[in-house]
Image (tube, rainbow, N blue to C red):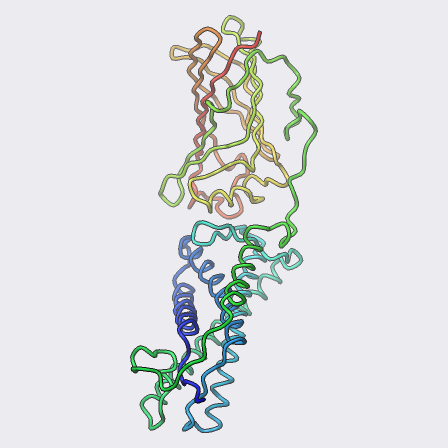
Length: 401
């Protein structure tokens, strides 16, 4: 039986999805400097191309490829096969080398978040995370981009040449809807599960099982009841118990002219407070830095990096409140905030409403990033992220007898 000269619907869809992705990647590569959103989109499309290419290769191995027009010369067929084969190599090599560029970044630890939703880990290539390794990865990736541009031009030129020449033409192989009915019946498509199942399985394995892929270590645990600053939480007897469900620690600031916000989901506080004995008042707050959640997934992932909270090396931050004073509008205390190896002391004004054995406190503080060594590698001059970070604390607590 004569085989149709046209590709099936699945092969056509994969061809054009990848083709548009490659063109988009080239355009983004030339226009994404100093643009965080475009840079993240560039990485997202690159990983998408990688996964679609895996599906396309498996699909091609299972489903027969339509023959080239008989009128094509032998050398033209050979050249066509070479271009197609090289394209398959590039469709794998381009996103892999781009992934390598991101993974070997030794100055800026900017995470990859696919389409602002899914965290994508770095390749486990710590031995290349230096100036030389990163430069090699960038060089290879940039040169492959130029190879892709040249091959894309050859591919398009060849298709146009055969379409306007005397041959039967090849465009109809990938655009069947514009050329009427197929010239011969196509075999039924096979391999949906192997092709797309392989791509989906790889995506799920890398995106959602990062310890298996990247060897990410769990955060080290410190001594019981001792935070990173070495504060012993048993140094005094608290007389208030915090109602966590009704309490919160949030933060906010600006990034690239827009406001961001977030909160810490895992923290605890030991509080000793008596309005008639402020000299004895004290509070110790322990915050798990990995529990920070920001208004964007990218910000959340960024906060875990070494230049920000360094959640692996310093899983806990602390706040110690002392020197309580009564004011006309409520109270104030001195808050010693310790993040990583840096400590700053800032005023912490707050209001307090006590009814029976229940207390409600609301307070705010403003800290600067530089003294706490936050984001000093990628943005030491606060060109993108504002220097000031506003902290708001709301606590509901019950009196302990």
